[in-house]
Amino acid sequence: MSRSAHPAGPRHGDVLPEGHYSAPPTDLNALDPKVWSQTVTRTADGTVTVGGIEVTRLAEEFGTPAYFLDEADFRARCQAWRDAFGTDADVFYAGKAFLSRAVVRWLHEEGLNLDVCSAGELTTALDAGMPAERIALHGNNKTPEEIERAVAAGVGHIVLDSFQEIVRVAHIADRLGKRQRVQIRVTVGVEAHTHEFIATAHEDQKFGIGLAGGEAAEAVRRALKLDGLELVGIHSHIGSQIFDTAGFEVAARRVVSLLAEIRDEHGVELPEIDLGGGLGIAYTSDDDPAEPHDIAKSLREIVTRECAASKLRTPRISVEPGRAIVGPTAFTLYEVGTIKPLEGLRTYVSVDGGMSDNIRTALYDAEYSVALVSRSSDAEPMLVRVVGKHCESGDIVVRDAFLPADLAPGDLIAVPATGAYCRSMASNYNHALRPPVVAVNDGAGRVIVRRETEEDLLRLDVG
Ligand code: LLP
Image (cartoon, rainbow, N blue to C red; front, side, top):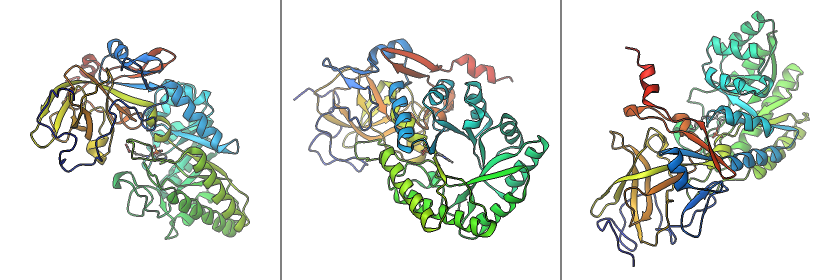
């Protein structure tokens, strides 16, 4: 048995404290392809590589903490979604998961469209050359300026989220002498089995217009009367990090039945339905997400069947995956600092980042995996909590995981599946400098979002 550098924490065979984990993994050096991006492998000498480069070299060149994004994997996932849905459907990547100019160019090259939800995302998309007609604008409280910029740019559609917005978008379009294509977002009343903060189709929350009480039908009535609007479809997004596809199926059925009501009342068959994003990904080996192909097949079947039953022409389907495309493509690389074994509990492993680069664990109780990547180790598993360097005890990156007991300061550890909602939700808490995003491909790393500097912080501080 290897010598343990941290003898106080629980070991294999001990009774373990309460936590979110199962038994210690049998091989701590293994990298489960479910949670690591496609080109990540461990070489014979134990170092981990991504895109053909050792993480130790990446750390030297780009520093830590940093997000490393596997470009080939990103492109492959775009292709998988595009191929799964085919040419009679549209895939809109949800930019809120992570957006940068490089990402916009990849999306454009791979034939995806883009969903934006703020002026900042719209600017990034247009600046990187995404054709406006391939952009959709979302948001529950779009400002008049955001709407005006989107209409003036000629975005493909705007998703209307309230009665006020129906009027507001129509007025702005009139003023600009345009007719804006719009969809209406409805809340279909599905309880998605996910964290409360990322479930969006139950009635008691801020998004969309209710279906059950007839508000959605009223919204359609109003939108159809306004010259500035071309109502092209109905939109539903039931939530995020969802594994049970039954929710999407119920949503599809309810949206189609609204289309039938609209046809009966107005004699109009709306040509589009958008079923939103929300497909879950594997953060740990316990997660089993559905494949885009299977999602596409089941949604298409339901929509086709329900439309046939209501004698409707099958509308063009669109979806808006964010996490499922970018989430698995990146990992965060950290350097290990302080290691604190707590007798009978667990060992706290502090890294050089934390809740400022990954707020998801603190905010949603999200689960992550972690691995030692600068070398392999045959030391026994040690129960750890990976924590950051912020002044909060809730500053947890990985709540419960196992790392080798010979872990030492200076080792590099990586947290996989951090491509979505980590850099995009990063903060400057404690004046942390937000880490860079480095795209790795074909043996080279390229910074696509640079690391913040202290000058960046001081530039905003004009007092
Ligand atoms: N479409 C709409 C209208 C959305 O609101 C969202 C996500 C998506 C698509 C993309 O969902 P995805 O496929 O990425 O799950 N910060 C949370 C997630 C918030 C999602 C907000 N809307 C997290 O870190 O889990």
